Length: 251
Image (cartoon, rainbow, N blue to C red; front, side, top):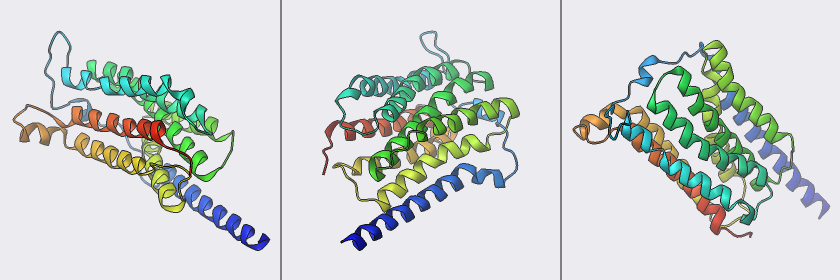
C-alpha cells in the first residue's frame, strides 16, 4: 500500500512538473522571437459607428456581459465550495473591471487607454489559472497567486515601459495551456468539469472573431463586426466558469 501511495505521489509530481514546464514555455516562449510592438492598426476597428452620443457604440456596449458575469460571480463568491476563494475573487474582479476598462478603451482607442483594458484582463487570466491549479491538483502554494499577479500585471507594465508585448502574449496563452493540461492530466474532483472545455472553446472562438473583425463586417454588409462578437464570446466563456462553480459538487 505504501508503494502504491509513493507511486501515486510520483505520478502527480511528474504531471505537475509537465504542467509547470508547459506553462513556463507558453509564458516565456515568445521571447524566442524578436520584440513585438503594438500594431497601431489594431486601434482601427471595423465598426466605428456612433449612436446615442457613444463613439464606437457596438464595441463599447458589448462589454456589458462582462460586468454582469463579474458582479454575479463576486456576489456569489462566499457560496462557492472552493479551496481557492481568493483566486476566484481575483478572477471575477478582473472580469468586472474588464467591462469598464474595455469600454473606456473602445470609447477612445489608443495605446494609453488600452492599458486599462489589459490590466484587468491579466487579473482574470491569473486568477483563473491559480484557481484551477489549486482545485484540480490540490497544490496549496500561497505564493502562487501573488507571483502570478506580479507576472500578469508586470507584463502590461513591461509593455508600457518598453513597447514589447511578448510577456503579455504569454500571459494570454498560459491560462489556456494550463487549463487544457489540467483537464487532460488530472481526474476532476468536481462534477461539471466539462464546463471548462466549453469555456476554452468559447475563448478560442473569441480570439478568432477578434482576428477577423473586418472580414465579419464585410460578410454581414457592415451589420456586425468581429470585435463585438469577441466580447460576447469571451464573456460567455466566463459565464460557463461561473455556472460550473454554481452547480458543481465534490466527487
